[in-house]
Structure formats: structure tokens, C-alpha cells
Length: 202
Figure 1 (cartoon, rainbow, N blue to C red):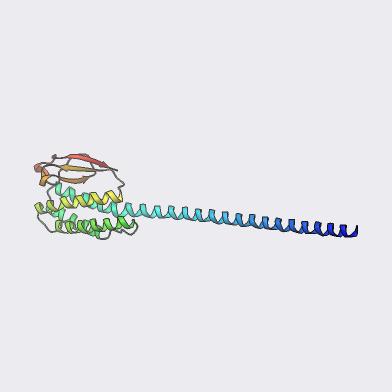
Figure 2 (cartoon, rainbow, N blue to C red):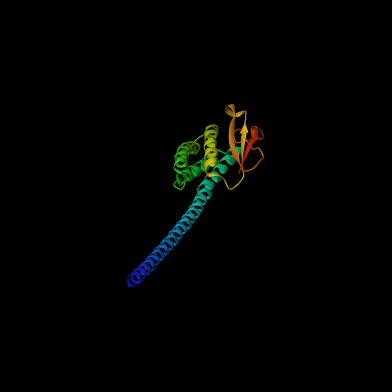
């Protein structure tokens, strides 16, 4: 009889201690799970914050450097519309300077490569425009316009731009304008309204 009660007591004690241990393990598992989910949530939040701040930086870059280049290009276009060689030369010099200070570092690696190629070519044409006669300025403006159109396709634009096209000049030539009205930079007053809007860029 004594033996039975001792055995029972040992069994009861073993069961109690096992239960306590499994409870402890279960609590430990729960607390580990809670910690892991907390850490994951923090990681996600930090990642979101990172993305948000990067987006802000990218937008700032696009709206400063790219906007300045487009503004200088428009000044040059207006000078050619007016057939004003001196103003076109000054605008070409200013555009050359804006292109040289264009910061491509915030764009993707692929965009950076494309932008560097576009900018190098555009600088060369802007430089020629700054020291050429009006006919030669217009020749370089044709290729420069293609470069700026390609650049805007990557950087985007804050303002609505109109890609316009003259079928008569050099087998057909495009340019950008901030107005739908056709004012031809390739012929000026000789054929001011020659051309059409090819597309709207937003």
C-alpha cells in the first residue's frame, strides 16, 4: 500500500513538473514570436519611411535641374523664333551651363547612363549654338531638340509641353513648346505657322 502511494506521489510530481516546463516553453515561444513580429513590423515601417524619403529626393531633383534645362531651352527656342542670333547665342551658353550642372545621381543606373549620353550630346550642340550664325544655330537646334525630348521622357515635366513638328525643314524637324500655338524656330517670320502639334507631354 505504501509502495503504491509513493509511486503515485512520484507520478503526480513528475506530471506537475512536466506541465510547468511545457508551460514555460510555450510562454517562451509566444514571447519569441511576439518579438519577431515586432521586429518585422519595425523593419517594414523603416523600409516604408526609406522609400518615402527617396521619392521626395527624386521629385526634388526632377523639378530643379530638369526644369532649369527646359526653361533655358525655351528661351533659346524663342530667340530662334525671333531670328535673333545674339539672344540665341546667349541662351545656348546658358543652356550649356545648366546641362553641365545637371545632377543625374538620383536616377536609376540605366537612366543615369541614358541621361549622361543625352546631356553630353546636348552640351555639344548648345556650345555650337553659342558661337554660330543663325542658320548654323538652327541646324544644331534640330538635334538639340531631339536630345531635350529624350531627356524629358526620362525626367518627366511639371508643365504640359507640346512636341511640334515642321515637315519642311531638313526633311522634317521637331521641337518643344509650352504653347499649342505654332511659332516655328526653324524659319521664324519666313514661315512662322508652318508645323503641327505631334503630341502633348504631361
